[in-house]
Image (cartoon, rainbow, N blue to C red; front, side, top):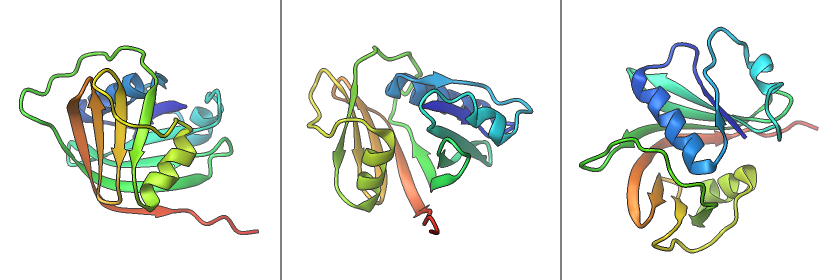
Length: 155
């Protein structure tokens, strides 16, 4: 998976991209003036995550396949706990836990194992109204879901 941002991201959105890349053990790339197809062609396994900006903060996450087709779009707001500060995370394999349709979609697209959250792990807790990113038993941040839509492929 490759993570990038919208074309002119705020500092908060760039930081969120770095955190997501560190959490998922994947690459973050600044987008600059590259188009979507140019970015998609650089993806190693074909999944691209684009973090969009809204009023100076991360406001959306879109997932694209290896052909640049949008798979999932999530509109969100971000909550940081007191004392939040970005630090790179250890290269532990993340797991996903939760319930609901969004959990099932993320589990499928991100291709990370489903499992319990332990004190010495990275875990994404997903539901239809929020995504919590947990590292070493501490919540890093929470993405509050405003809405999401999955794309339906026509045959």
